[in-house]
Length: 337
Image (cartoon, rainbow, N blue to C red; front, side, top):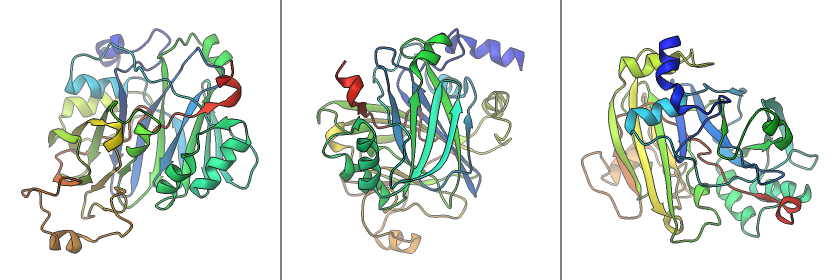
C-alpha cells in the first residue's frame, strides 16, 4: 500500500483532504448495492455550508470513503488534477420537523443527516430551520422525490474543520451504500440557481459488473468505456475503506459540459440484466421497460432525438461525484454576514 499512497500522495492536501479540479462522482454497483462516493468541499469564508444530495433509495451505511480514490480516478483520465473546485457549497442542517430523520452521523468535521420526505416537505424542513433555499427549491426537490423520497444533507463544522487544518477547497469524501436495482446519478441538481448560460462541468466514473447501457440528456458524453484495468482496481482497493472494490469490472468515464439551463436530466444506468430507466433519468413521468425502449428503436448503434440520449457505456466505475449531485443552499445567518 505504501507505494500506491506515494504515487497518489501529491493529489491530496497536506491534511489528507480531497482536492479536485471539478465536481467528481464515483458510483460502483455489484448487482444489488450501489456504492456512491462524492466529495464535500470546505469553504472557510462561510460560517455554515454543505449540500443536499438526492438518493435512489434508503442507505444502509454512510462512512468516510478512500482518501485519494477520487483523485486516482481523475488521474486515470487526465493529468490536470491540481486545481481547486471553484464552486462553494452551502448547507442544510438537521433539525426536528415533519420530515423523518433516518440517520445521523459525523465523519471528521462533517455532520451527515439522511432524511425521508416529499420534496416540498424537505425544502420546508430546511427553511424552517434557518436555511434559505430559494423559491424554486420545493419544485426541484419534488423532481427528485417523485422517484425517491431519500435525501442526504451534509454540513461542515467550520471551527472543527479549521482545527483539522482545512482551508477553502479541501474536502471530505463520503461513501454511501444504497441497495438498488440499478445505479442512478443525480445531475440536474448541479445546475440549480446557476445562470442559464453558465457551463456546468463534472466527471462521473462508473464501475459495473458488465458493460452498461445509459439514458441521459445531451451534454454528457462517454470518454472511456472499457474493461477496468487491474492496476486501477488494485490502486482503488488499496485505499482506506475501499477493500470492497472488485478484482474485475467495466469502467466508464463520462464528462458533463452543458449550460445550466439545459441540464434538465439525470443519469440512469442499466447493467447486469437490468435496463436503464427514462423515469430515473428524469426524462418522463412514465417508466419504460427494455421492450418499450426497443420499441422506440433505441439501441447503442442508433442515433436518438436531440433532447435525450441512450448509449452503451463501457464502464462500471462511476458514481455521482465529488459533490456530484450536490445542490448549493445558503443558511440565512451565513448569507447576512
